[in-house]
Amino acid sequence: MHGKENDADSEMEELQLQGRMRSIKQKFIVLSGKGGVGKSTVAANLAVSLALKGKKTGLLDVDLHGPSIPGLLGIKDKRILTDANGNITPLDVSENLKVVSVGLLLDSHKDAVIWRGPMKYGVIRQFLKDVEWGDLDYLVIDSPPGTGDEPLSVAQLVGFNSAAVIVTTPQMIAIDDVRRGISFCEKLDIPVAGIIENMSGFSCPHCNELSNLFGSGGGEKLAEECKVPFLGKIPITPEIASGGDKGQTFVKEYSQTAAAKAFDKIVDSLISKTEKNDNQIKETKQMKIAIPTAAKKLCMHFGHCEEFALIDVDSTAKKILKTEYVVPPPHEPGLLPKWLHEKGANVIVAGGMGQRAQNLFAENNIIVVTGAIGEAPEDIALAYLNKTLQTGSNTCDH
Ligand code: ADP
Image (cartoon, rainbow, N blue to C red; front, side, top):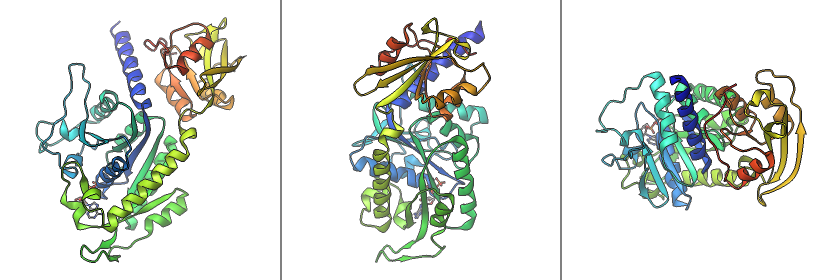
């Protein structure tokens, strides 16, 4: 009994998480192969640049080892609050920029943050589920360093419309870490928005001239080799390390430096990539919604349904174009997501579905909605398009 209640609770949480993630148009997960390469610095400056360009932006710091975003934005002494239901209201730090950092939840920013493995996953998940961002154009996530469990859980939890921005330094040692970072993204099927080479050359604070103290260009070569975009180089710039003031950070305060200009160019390219791909990474105008059925009604047993209703819709006009019923192949774990992908489905609306199956659908680029309530598949599809679909708990895990 207890277990069932827990299951229902966690399914509700899953729905809440999916709902939150859906109201964010694009998420950038900032990753690095290891610590100290400037991942947090890059995340903070990307977020501030996006906000300065008029984009509604959130910056989420889930680097549990050393939440450095509050220091970078000059907001170390601020705190964010949670309400009685556990919802977290982000800190408005400047026009268009909201910030949540694990460092802003602690009693003192000097507190050591020691999280155990499973707890870390829970904390990251909770952050993504509980923060009330509202509608955002972009969410920049400063993830924990490395390619271990923690960045992996961030990547898995944020789901659709996300891309990785990988930060490296020019040294070969860091380059190997990036290789791991890229293969990590490939495994999880996360598109790599590109590589940024940080601390690339030294930009003289007096004359802005660049000199390559520690080498330069390794990131670019690697991007070419791994066939991922190269976004740009940020030179070593003493002012970057000086900390931010009133949520503005370096890019705003030192906009004339070579590094700030480099950030500006990188952000422009990220925006244009995102907006160009908008139709691909978001729900497309023409979509196919799959709904498991029995006797032409929604069937709770997704894995053992009689037929799938495959409904072609125009998501802009919110109209049904065509409905077709198809009999699925005999049940075999992992087969349905592939089969539905081959049939062209973009969305599956189901009563219940286990987490593993949900992950497999995500890997096949199919949006999963669980806990659907209703009977006629076409009514369910229309309700989905009109965002009026009633959902309850995930009814069946098998
Ligand atoms: P990470 O998040 O990868 O651990 P940080 O962003 O905390 O790295 O940066 C590590 C240190 O390097 C910080 O002191 C930061 O101010 C400094 N730093 C980062 N990028 C630059 C740069 N381009 N020029 C000068 N200092 C930098």
